[in-house]
Length: 256
Image (cartoon, rainbow, N blue to C red; front, side):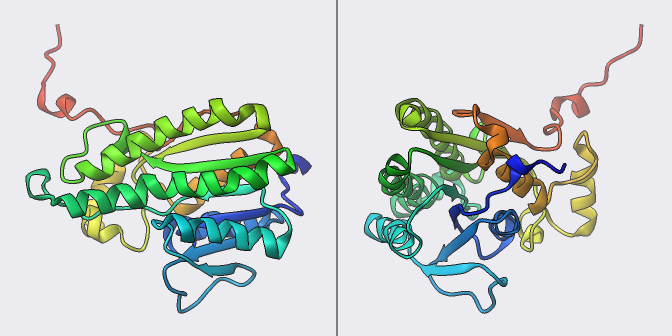
């Protein structure tokens, strides 16, 4: 679509977890649309895509999250877009999850998004506009066995999205969330198994394929553009049509 409203020339964006996986695709899409893009991580990656800027930060720490935003504004004079993408969790049985583990998962997947949103509020309000996109997960809207803390954090992120949209809308700040489904990344084998297993997972989805980083990046790009200027507080499923209810494979319906 050749629409000038999708362009982000002159905009400044922060993408957390933007050095790999879905985050790298999001950062690349924003950069291609004309934005200055800052990505962050606890340590610098071995290689960084040309044009992206890196800031070392542990965003689970509120002071470092705030400094990431403040540094961006000092260097570039503004902030227009925040994509809270960093997150994840290993599989741990709920009965075995320690308090320290539970706290760590919530800090990464929920607290960090709040810290960064709070830090970004001032620059957004001063500029009269801003866009926050929170990368949530289907784990936040359905049971998440084996990753209960992660599911709880993502459910909280969805509520946070709508609460901030309500509070900050009068200041011109839009806050939205993407509910991301089953996506292939460089670590897909750890989650979904080998190629055969991944093909089976893909076939179970209505669109007969798993998602990829570009699918998510395209949705982020739209939400950050003027095309979505009246979209706020939205929870948008980007999941290829959703997961097939398991009971359908267990129950055999007899034809009359």
